Amino acid sequence: MTLEQTLPICIAGTWRLGAGERYASCYPATGEPVAWLNAASLDDVEAAVQGAHQAYVHSGWAQRKPHERAAVLYRIAELIRQRAEELAQLQRQDNGKPINETRALVASAAGTFQFFAAACETLEETITPSRGDFLSMSVYEPMGVVAAITPWNSPIASEAQKVAPALAGGNAVVIKPAEITPLLALQLAQICEDAGLPKGLISVLPGKGSLLGDALTRHPLVKRVSFTGGTRTGKHIAHIAADKMMPVSLELGGKSPTIVLDDADLDHAVAGVLYGIFSSSGEACIAGSRLFVARALYEPFMTRLSAAAAQLRLGDPADERTQMGPLISAAHRESVERYVALGLAEGGRLRLGGERPSGGVFDQGYFYPPTILEGLGNHQQVCQEEIFGPVLVALPFDSEEQLIEQANDSLYALAAGIWSRDYKRAWALGRKLQAGTVWINTYKQFSISTPFGGWRDSGLGREKGRLGILQYMEQKSLYWGMNQQPLAWAGVEAGQ
Ligand code: NDP
Image 1 (cartoon, helix red, strand yellow):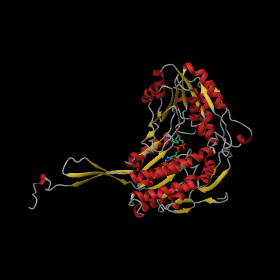
Image 2 (cartoon, rainbow, N blue to C red):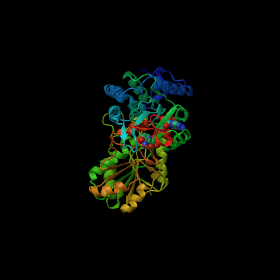
Image 3 (cartoon, rainbow, N blue to C red):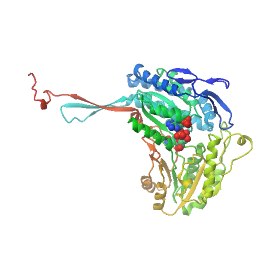
Image 4 (cartoon, rainbow, N blue to C red):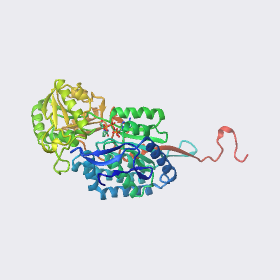
């Protein structure tokens, strides 16, 4: 790939230039173009969906035995592993995450394909207890064309979480990656083809979500949408889906509380809170962005936390030692800065950070330092809205009752963290927190085998987990008559 080239995109089994506007994917650490491509157009959306439908109907993929589909998914996992370093470097350039993080995302994508290959070939259909002269079964069928709409913050891992179970379930997939991070979805489509996936079963439509994602969601041949992104977009998609009576899964935003109880192991809590909010520069839906600390511990804990946060290595994403890279774009950094200014206007104080770094690489990219705000109330805007950057709001609490009320007082309910040496106490608190995931004495740890998703404005449905594949399948009940006699109601006798 050279910079002069315009990258082809994958539409219905052919690699060709998109029919939309030419644009560049840029490296957030320098603002320089990494690759040029043409966005897809509305005609490309139509071609991708029609091609996916044709491939779904005619390629025989849906009819392959589960272990045969699994074999292709295992090969996809293997090819991702073979190309891991190249993919990790490309992803670093596409979205500016530190190289160690993009390596982990690529490894997780390979693991996801492997996991859903196994889920596919071990998925059981059940014979249900019979309540009459019949045998009743519950089986699963593919849905058809699935749309996978993904955000910019964790490309390849987010795509794998949708594409792997959708293909495992026998479907075709059209991916709409975020406009600004299209490169890994294109690579994934190439790998799927190289692994032997029938052509047309996967397409990628780079470009604007408000145009392409919207059209894809509305398309009558699209039978399911799996979306990860912001809550406002998720609600828009849910409205369209309601009109089509189409199932959707929505992985949305968060404003997750991390709680340090007065009996916490402080070394573990400091390390976990830092990782929870500042890794990925806070550009994570599960970022632990609201910190609640028992008042008795508040000052000593915040002193240690701030000192450790000030030591985090912000800088060049290509450097193996870097812990925080740049934010995704100039516009996003401005949005983070506006939130910090708002926090100060609301009466907050800066405990750390709050100013753009300068000099060297910092003058080129969209860097922003670890920032801690305090002196605010949980009801205030910066404590309620998702900032999606390296900004932590810290609040002391006096009683567990007050803590639970405030921790749950959010439109979001994606994740939460608890730091305590007392597992019984943490268990009781964990059961009272309203969140899709609660981490106890750890944070931001993930397993593909564990379901993930949010409550309330953080989303609908679950991804991952062995049964994640069923999100992409329709359930069907089959009844087999075992009667020796005709059904009694009609009064027909056997042999009449
Ligand atoms: P957006 O909702 O803006 O974008 C997500 C995807 O949706 C992008 O591909 C975008 O395209 C597309 N899109 C935008 N408008 C529409 C539309 N009208 N119809 C269909 N698709 C559309 O979110 P961000 O990209 O800003 O991502 C950050 C958000 O994602 C944060 O709020 C974060 O919390 C959430 N997120 C949630 C995760 C979870 O698992 N719960 C994980 C990661 C992020 P384009 O960008 O090209 O316009």
